[in-house]
Image (cartoon, rainbow, N blue to C red; front, side):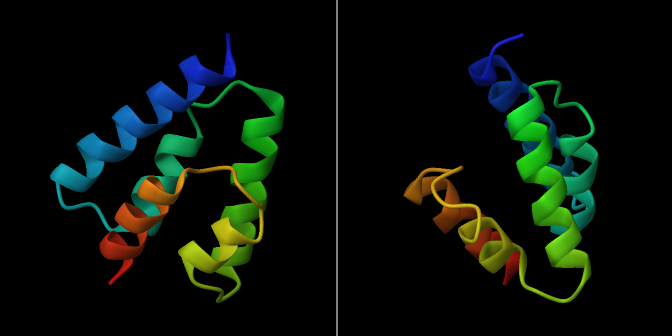
Amino acid sequence: MSLRDDQTRFFGKLSAMMEAEVPLLNAFEVAAESVLHPGFKAALDRILTSAYSGTSLTESISAEGSIFSPEVMCLLRHGED
């Protein structure tokens, strides 16, 4: 399984759950459970740990560097508001 395939699956699940009005952090966690790529999975786990400890989701993602594009960050920031 390639990183791109995992990212596609992750965002597909995240999108479906957001459409169903699942809270963003919960949707992010469920979508992360579908990821198989070890590096991407580890980054998502660190993001979730940080977010559940009180840091905003977008700040937690930003701490991981450029894991997501600026466009995705904008969408996540909007979903978090």
